[in-house]
Image (cartoon, rainbow, N blue to C red):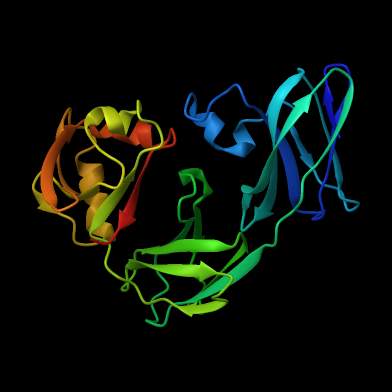
Length: 269
């Protein structure tokens, strides 16, 4: 159930124990505030744990239009979103239902014997807040649980075999990490009036250098971003289709833009 100020809302799910539900007003568009991007920081009716019988109660909240968001706790993350449905709440008690989709796991094997660094997993096309970071185990294995079906980018930061690869879930239950080098950052524009678009970037751009220094790997890429963070303006070399162009922008503003729905993600040229 979900309840308004005059009652409560109750929702039903089927993954009691580690599932939770929250509400976000539809009127608060994604990108208007950083907290809107993450379901665990955007609720107005609180967060409710789904009980063993598949029910949860939220509220009270104002009557209106909301997204009901179903998330799970996984690998230390509370806000792994699994599903959302639109609900319209009126005064008094309301009832809504939301189905838990099939969830999967994938185990990554790192065979170089180096357990340094960590692994980042990001569903292709998903918002940046969905990415998860997992440390390598002593046996060189990492298991990522509660994944929706789809294509994922797996990136290793640190260690000998830095790089990234694509994994399809649930087709791949156990995968040997065979990376391609990270030598670019792919720009995704979610807001045509956002920071990245205003700086001159377009959706699909590949950033390949900063201040004349070409990207050669994950560690060097990170260092270049950090070392230029304090500069008022930075020159970015960008591959746009078959052209190589230059975009000048403020690094801190771009970072804020990437937290508001736009993104710059590791990529291979």
